[in-house]
Length: 116
Image (cartoon, rainbow, N blue to C red; front, side, top):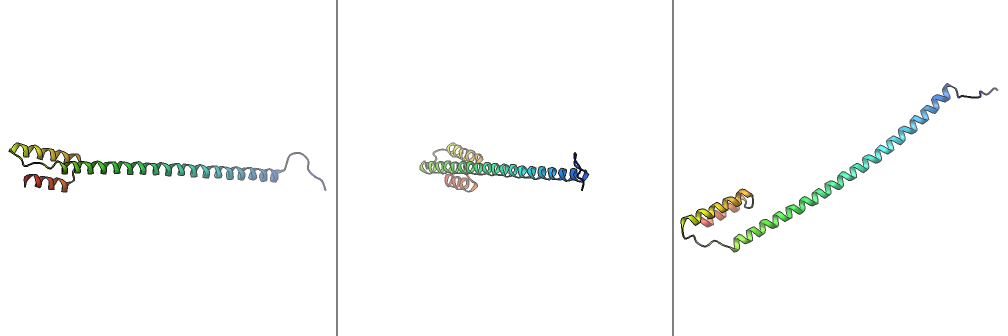
């Protein structure tokens, strides 16, 4: 039996190319999978941090509204001596309502209290 010496034959070269290409594809797929997992983990961490910041801002806003309402309740307006005082108070309430500090219900209740 004669063995061929030197370069591999056509079938040997095709087999070697297939093995190299398959290995490269497998490695590239693994790297891509790892990169995707890492990017997803970073995205989830950013979303969690954003949720925490939003919750802190919501709590601070609720606290500010509660303090504002407590201050308004503590400083109950005295009966108005003149018509201009009522107008000024209504303008103040309107400004607070426009700024979003007072809700529609709170604004209506404060207005009724002032006028009634």
